Length: 188
Image 1 (tube, rainbow, N blue to C red):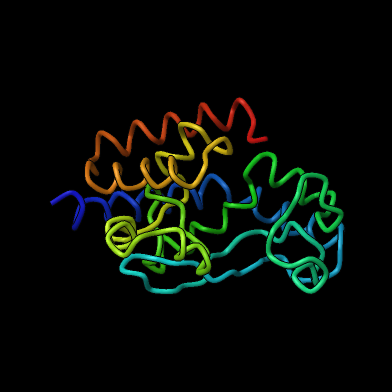
Image 2 (spheres, one colour):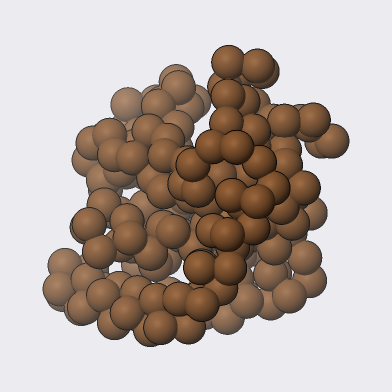
């Protein structure tokens, strides 16, 4: 019952609270992005959602406007395509705030496995892909709250599938607190 009804109610209430808390910071961040570099404020990217459906995730733009043409999808440490404000947004994970709107659109949850980019589908067997994508992806998830950037694909899949099998309000609340602790320590 939690997975089907109460989780969505929890997500909407959490997203409303987050809009209230982050409204002024979102305006400030938007202005800083526009001052720092040319281009739009938001970056939209295709991701895999529940049931394998493709959707566009919203993020604050952290790279120069034509970054994909300059260097492709992957970023590296000290990537010169990352803007000054973008480096700060990535380090603090503030670039993820616009995903609140993905929650309202119904293609993301507050807590769930981070959404894969389409080319990551090849990292799964058919059975793993179905298990991994049977819930909405989240702004934060079990893998991100426990090991953040120190996971290989195999261990990330293990965390994500475990979450999908054990999903509960209690687990979501634990992940929220673990995420806060991880963010306070610093992302990178």
